[in-house]
Amino acid sequence: MPPEYQSKDYWHARFGHETSFEWLVPSADFLKILDPFLARLPTTARILQLGCGTSDIHCLLRQRGYEHITNMDYEPLAIGRSRDIEHKMFGDSVMSYVVADATDFNLGQTRFDLVIDKSTADAVACTGPAPVISMTKAVKRCLAEDGMWLSLSFSAYRYDHDGMPLSVQVINKIPTPKAKETDPDIFHYCYLLRPMQSEACRRSK
Ligand SMILES: C[S@@+](CC[C@H](N)C(=O)[O-])C[C@H]1O[C@@H](n2cnc3c(N)ncnc32)[C@H](O)[C@@H]1O
Image 1 (tube, rainbow, N blue to C red):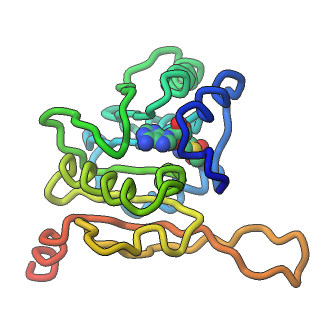
Image 2 (image 1 turned 45 degrees about the vertical axis):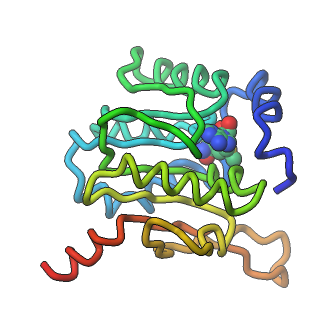
């Protein structure tokens, strides 16, 4: 990713004209990866999307019955677009929209059952591992005890850092389309991040 992807000015300029765009994969493909996890989540679950941009994944989740969704982006134009997408699809907007920095946010007492991001950690990682670790710490603070973060990234090393406060596991590798058959295999990686002690609890149950 070019270095400007971590810059607010870059996103501000981009969302000035971009009304819809899906990074890495269409949101329906991301939803397929989320599906087995959603199967265990009641529709009352609290969901947080980090760096929503102009993706429509929040609306696909609402179509599944989830309405307690908070969509976060540090660029106000993206938040406006995201709300517009919901309004256009449903005729109203029931979700929460928050302008905040995914590396340092505080959403009060709310604890989320599911946190998702599609390529937001990639943008955050453009300045190095420190902001990714900060983002992980911020997610940890707002995760429910049994909560999980599903993060789709183009990098096989996105969370390979010392001092990660959540356990990290690759749960899916999506092959990217090839221009030629002889092109190398390139994947997108879906990570499951969750509190370390909840993993231990699960094992002991
Ligand atoms: C690569 S785009 C992905 C957008 C969307 N998730 C998708 O899949 O199409 C990254 C998004 O993260 C936002 N972003 C980048 N750094 C951020 C940060 N530190 N805090 C909050 N949002 C951030 C950008 O404004 C942009 O909307």
